Each structure stands twice: as C-alpha cells, then as structure tokens.
Image (tube, rainbow, N blue to C red; front, side, top):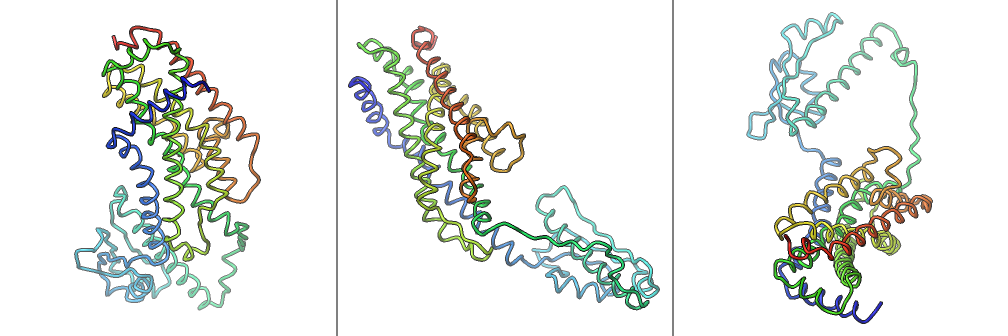
Length: 378
C-alpha cells in the first residue's frame, strides 16, 4: 500500500473522528443491539419457564366445575381485573347433562384470533381444553371396561439428538444476524460523509485536483469505512460476550457463551462482508445528489442484506441462498457454532462472491469519479 493511500486513510479517519456525534451514531447499534437481544432472551426465557397466569371470562362456570378446576391447575382462571384477557369461554347449558350421558359437551371460545397479543393465550387455552378432553375420553373408556390404549394404535417416541452445544447454537445463530449487520450500520455514516458529504462541502473536487489517482482515492475511502465497520463488529462481540453471560440459559438446560473461537471466526467471516458493505454504501452515496438523498437510498439498499441475513438465520429460503453473500457466510457460521463440520466450500464460494461484488462496485466508483456529474452532483 503506497504512502499516498496511507495518508488519505489517515485523513479520512481523522475527519471522521472529529465528528464525534456521527461516530457515536454509528456505534450505538454495536452496543445497543446485543443488549436488546439479551433483554428479549430474558423475556422469552421467563415466559417459557414460568408462564403468567391467564385470566379470562368464563360463562356458566358453575355448569362445569371440574373443567374450571382443571383449567385453574393450568394457570387459567376466571378474572374480573384489568389484566383479564379479552377471551371468553362459554360453557353450554346442557354441558353437565351431556357429560353424564357420555355425549359430547359443547364449549365455545370467543376471541379475536387476528390480535397478535391474544394468539399465544388462545393457543394455551385450546391446548388445555384438548388435554381435558383427552383425559375425559380415557375415563369414559375405562368406565366401559375398555383399555384407553386401543385408541392409540401408534406410540410415538421422539429421540432428540440435539446436544447442549447445538441447542445453544440455535440461540446464538439468531444473534449472529444482529452481529453481522453491525458492519453495515457502523460504517454507514462515514460512507455517506466521505462521499456525498464531501461533495456538498466542495472538498471532493479539491481532493481530485491533487496528484493522486482515482483508484487511490477509492481504495482509501473503502479502507476507512471498512475499518469503522470492523470496529463496530468487534465492539458488538465484546458487548455480547459480557451481556450474554447474565442471561439465565441454565433454565433452558444449556449455556450460551461467546467464546474466543466464535469471535475469531466471526471476524474472519465478517471481513469480506465489511468490505462489500463499504463498497456498497460508498457507491450508492456517490450516485446520490445530496447527503439526505444518500441516507434515503442506503436505508432502502440495506434491506437486501437484512433479508438475506434473516433468511439464513431462520432457514426460510431455498438451498441456493447458501452461495450468496451474507446468507452463505451466516449459514456457515451457524453450522460452526452448533459444533458441526464447517462447510468450507460454501464459505469459500459465498466469500468469493462477496468480494467479487465489492470489486465490481469499486470499479464502478473509480469510473464514476471521472464524471463531472458525480463529482459536482449535477
């Protein structure tokens, strides 16, 4: 790397460091995202291990005292307080008579299934009613001298081969999406400022008037943005390492830890992604005519890597996605943290594809800086 490029990189980093507000805005995500993930895991573990009592409205409760008692043992009871869910269980008037005759007794659940806040409670109530129905059915068969097992021609045994490490990898795999996304957020402000921002301040044309080539300028800007992106990733990993240690994973039967091997692998995998992110953000910013326009464009463009990361983390896309940038690296990383063999071919192809896109964008930037329309924002 020539002395000119090193000098320009130093210049870009010094200029970025002067704008402390912009630097902190880029690093807020690196600190805040792991903390928000830990908060979400705290709430999720709390709901899974000790679900709150569910208070609902029960109509004609006196007609089915055994059912009401069974639901109460499952944490579902009739309530008239403010925390009562907008769910109503109506017990039919002939419930007791039909149960005594061995007939089907009717109960009705009245609720708004489109309300996201009620969906979990509705499923919990329905599951409890199905359990009660199954118990009553078995008792009816026993009363008639019939073994309830005749109603179960197939006995399903499920052997879970998941290890504590692989279970922890499932949780950590979801967190990797927010970690890898840090490279896009951390360097975004610098990418916009060093491209569209410099053009608005008329310093881009002054820089091009110096005895440096456009390639040297492009390489210096890409390197500076990449450094900021990697700093954000490192900060995210450090915060995650300490924050995840406070989450009560033991209540789920396993432990999640951000160890050194995971951090090293994340940095290795994140480096090509950071380079591509820097090239993508700089290219889009140079194409925009103003600072605000660049912010709008980049916000839209960053939806693509976010969707690829989500597809990889939740495994909701075709197998071809394993060869694409971001998604391919994330899937390989998830396999690594689950203790499985690292798919080197997949990682190599997706990383090569990532660097190829970065190179194409860099060439596009180098050519665009020779255009007066780009340099002066015409």
